[in-house]
Amino acid sequence: MNGFAPGAIAKPRLALIGGTGALGTGLARHWAAAGYHVIIGSRTVDKAEASARAIAAASGNRTLHGAANASAAQAGDVVLLAVPWASHAQILDEIKPHVAGKIVIDATVPLVPPKVARVQLPAETSAALAAQKRLGDTARVVAAFHNVSASKLQGDAPIDCDVLVFGDAPEDRAAVVALAEAAGLRGIHAGPLANAVAAEALTSVLIGINRHYKIPGAGIRITGLGKE
Image 1 (spheres, rainbow, N blue to C red):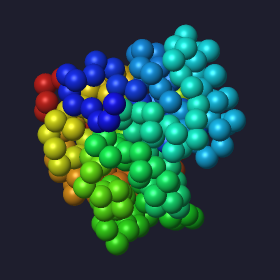
Image 2: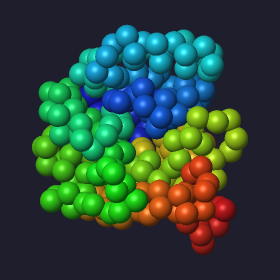
Image 3: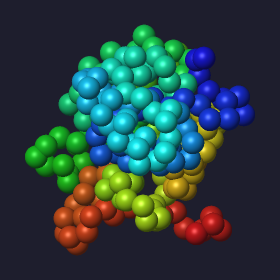
Image 4: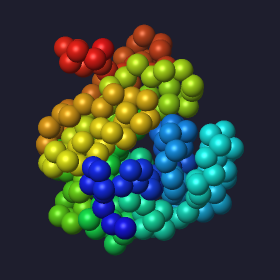
């Protein structure tokens, strides 16, 4: 089944492209524990399968499995992209034939080593807009999960962090807000996809804060919503 609209699928199949990285495995742990069918995607199938087995053993959720990136994208109802900026364009081209009509959550941040604490935005102004341009109008790109610490997602303690969710369709943002909350986070509607530049840039700021204050994972909280 292609795509996902709120209410259409109680728990969509989630394909995590780059799912063997710290952010991907952290989110996979939380979604697996919440009962979602998670597909770990990687360039190396053996690595994806090993990661899926480890998360399945820890969560007790036996629906996890690993696959090559393209196969994972094809199997997922919702596709999350959690890859390095250097691989972003290549992997988008790889999954493009398999994401038409689907929500593609782009968590990519355009970090350019070695100066990752300095904001360095691409010509398209953001990774999310670059993804939408590369995938075309058939994919429904939503940007999220830029500012949550991957190290905190790996632990079991409550995560005191909000997730800013950007997308041009309110119903697609709502679907991703729901997924953030299923992972134990608070999702916040943050406007159209063009606004994703703010969260992408903020990631470099947070990296600098982590270094200066010698802390493992600074995050953000939006005050005044009545749910703090």
